[in-house]
Length: 365
Ligand code: ATP
Image 1: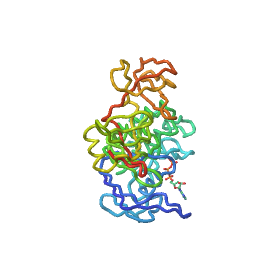
Image 2: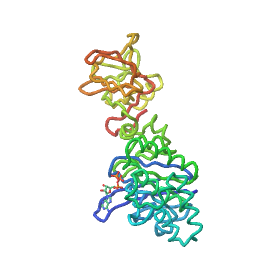
Image 3: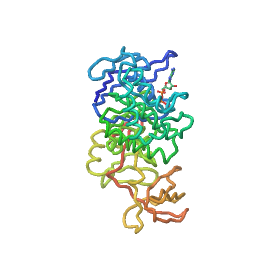
Image 4: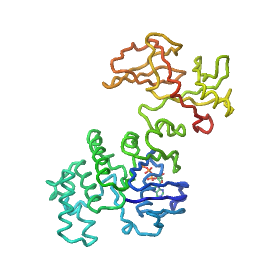
């Protein structure tokens, strides 16, 4: 049960590299916060600063209102689960799990009870005498989690703990970590570059790029209202379509024009575009693949585009259409069958169109 606050935190490494820039983040007690972003954006560095494994160059870290900058890692009461598990190779599973408690001079009986009980809850109680090299990746992952759980820390930090597992096990462990979170009622801070993990696990997502926070919000808000093109392209699979467009005021209303096509904006959006001076300006239009519909009965004014490729995943069918030297990705019903090379009529759910400023890449609506 712990609140973590980072105030204007910066990390500049010895070589002058500015890895984390002016980070302001407030994490409430019992939140499951996911830091997501591409490799090198500073996620691990943030975790390591919270854990006390990396010095904060500038700014403050508070845990439960106490300034932690100069508190040693071992005195922070935080457990970290690493990507490579970091188990002691020469120790048994039992000893690996017991290690932190032994260091804290907890009595043997209590250690035994905690380790066996935790091992049981993780389904690894029959592996306690084995050494790490005698375990599968998933089992090692459980041992690493178990070692963190027995310490009963006030905060769990997890650095891509699932990235070494195969796809199926990853999905299974993802669910187990979420269950664990609900059971332990503790603050979790979790690092990943996998948008599905971010969306499914977090109560709050922090999207990072090049050391800078791009957006902090709950998963649905991040998905529905991305603050900029970077966030929009990071979250969502297949990713949002981006099309260069121009805002045009014409008889009949305000349109987004692209190539030979145009889409009419709703009254609300039109008013906003008018007010904020976007008429005749170039913008980036964003539309998610599930917000583009096939007009199979040719009932409405639609875009006519050539079908380039179809990927049927069983539960959905991903269609790729040719548009202005690029591809427009559409999610269709699995039963949909179209002939490659044929022209299809498509229309956009106008209420789901995103508009980004061409220069700043920030969301306009
Ligand atoms: P990944 O997903 O690949 O783990 P990340 O987002 O966790 O990436 P960090 O490990 O936090 O990224 O690294 C952020 C940046 O800081 C990277 O560009 C990295 O090269 C740099 N960096 C990390 N550690 C050091 C160091 N000790 N000295 C100099 N630069 C470093």
